[in-house]
Length: 94
Image 1 (tube, rainbow, N blue to C red):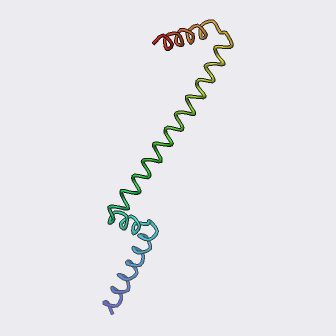
Image 2 (image 1 turned 180 degrees about the vertical axis):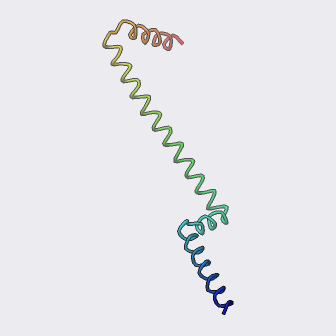
Image 3 (image 1 turned 120 degrees about the vertical axis):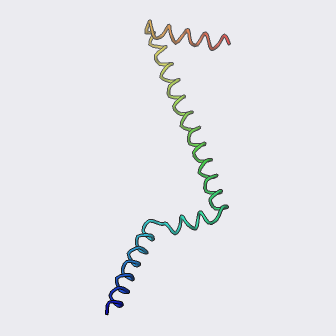
């Protein structure tokens, strides 16, 4: 009798563990780590995507900053306009 209860309890715990592992996608991770090629391809594509995203984001932010600075220069604000004009002169001279 005790052996049957122990076996049933063990089986129940194994089912809970199996459900938890399936829910956490640990099997997919184990499969991915088992294949070095899949891991390399996934990390390579991830790195390329991040690099392209950073490049596009930096380009957009720089363009917005340049547009804002151009608008500030056209407003002829004495202190800021002179400062930006000095920066432009320094950049153009080099």
